[in-house]
Length: 176
Image (cartoon, rainbow, N blue to C red):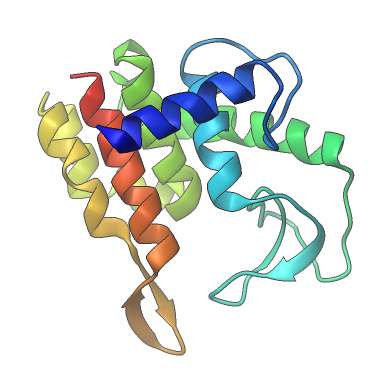
C-alpha cells in the first residue's frame, strides 16, 4: 500500500507541475500515469550516455537513433517521451487488442514495461498471452519476472529494474 501511496503522491506532483517529470499539459488517463511512472525510473539526461548494458541512451531512456555525443533540451526530451509512450501503446495494442479498454493504471503499467523491454519481447511474452486470455491479475503478476538484463554476457537482476517492476505490478494490480 505504501508503494501505491508514494506513486500517487508523485503522480499528483507531476500533474500539478511540482516534479522533475515532464510538466507540460498531457492527455489524462493512461498517458499521464505512464509519464509519471516512467520519467523518474528512466531519469532525465540531456547528453547521450551508455545505459547499464552499453546502449547509447538520452533523455528519459530513449535509445532509438541515439549516438554518443547527442544532446537534447528538456522540452525535446519531454515531447520525445510522450510521443514514444504513445508509439509503445499502439505497438502493444497491435498484439493486445484489448489494451485500450483496460483500466488506465493497467495500460500505464504495461506501457511502462513495454517501453523498457521493447514491443517485440512484450508481444511474445507470457504476460501478453495471459492478458489476451483475460487473466489481468496473472498478467500483472508476470511483471516481476522482467527485472533482469544481460550484463557482461550474464543475465543478472538489476535493483532498479526490480523496483520498477514492483511498482508497475502494484499499479497494475491496484486497478483490478
